[in-house]
Amino acid sequence: MKSWFIRGALALAIVPALAAAQQGADNPRPISVDEAVRLAVLNSPLTVASRNSEVSGRAGITFAKSQFLPSLALGYSATNQGGTQFIQGTPVAISGLPWTYSRNITSNLTVFDGGAHWYDYKAAGATLDAAVASDVSQRYSVALSVKVQYFAILAAREQESAAKRQLEEAQQALQVSAAKMLAGAATRADSLTGALGVGTAQLAIITAQNLLLNANAALTRLVASPVMVTAVAADTSDIGRVDVDAGSLTKMALEGPSIRAAAASYAVTQALHKASNTGYLPSITASGSYGQNPKSTQGFDFGGGPTSTSTRFGIAASYTIFNNYTREQSIILARISEDNAQANLRDAKFLAQQNLTQFLVNYQTAQQTITLQLLQIQSATENLRVQQQRYNIGTALQVDVTTAQAALDLARFNLITARLNARTAKANIEALIGRDLK
Image (cartoon, rainbow, N blue to C red; front, side, top):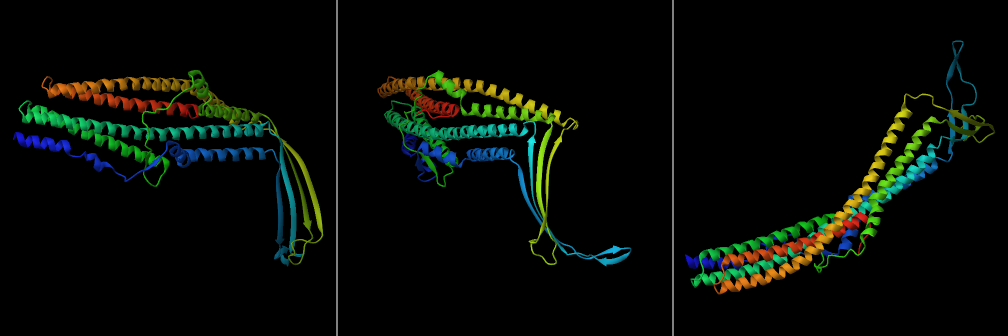
């Protein structure tokens, strides 16, 4: 029974990790983070919508400008009239030539509307500004999503590499415990512990590779690639730097895309509030027309004969005395929208400062954690080496080796997590200020 158990344990130690079957998509295409961001910004529904909002905003400005211009219309008609009519109860054929014609040009212009068109134009300009700021915000939001998945791929690779080292160390420990068990210097519990360590390492490999597959799939969706993509091989110790001081970053954050979008939205509501007040002012419009009435003809000839002409010019003024509180309702709603937008702008500024503080703290904490975990890994590696030697000569227990191995695994995991946190915090700062920190 003992020999059967030892052979089974040794077989477990050399069985390749089941993660090999977890490779999923064959040969995903490596892609740089800059290229991934470019493709995601190009294809994301969020950025497509934000770009279309800019197009709509420019169209809105063109429309608002056009309201200052007079309207112009051309008219033409040709009418054929026939049949009979009753005269003293007797049907009589309609006399006269059947074809009649008319041609005209008409124009209308709003001379005064209390400034409504001007405020509409200002609101259209602010709407475009908001759309531009929103587009920048959406681009960096999409870039943040891409970077998070990209960094998740790097972290998954680090975890897989660490798990493979963990498997190698667990296999060596199992071989030692199995050999000592054959020699009668160790118990079956030691071999069981070693076999459990191997299985745990294999599961860690599978978990890391599953994380890698999931992150690859998420990145592929974000960049809208027809084939699976992945991050390029890179030095995972490079987490990027934030060389800008906190004061400059605060200023950038207060001028970031989210603040600009909130400020533009506030400007829109201000203009619309002013436009709503113009309902208490009179409106004045001017209109004019010029018409021709060609001579009637027996047959259709486009009215090319002699014509009579007519001209008309008029100015009209109107003032609404009472419209069932429609003006008052519009003013109240416009003022509420302005108050809400002002509160949103104020809160956006405070939120930007809060987020910047949080992201900077996360980044700095991650940096310090990286330095600490590098030292911890060195210490844990040396401790594991010592415990293994002591176990080999019989002055330590298997549980001492297992504890040392667990400490090393934890230090590796904490290092990977700290690197991921640092990269993510830097990406969040870039999204907040609307610019890249190279």
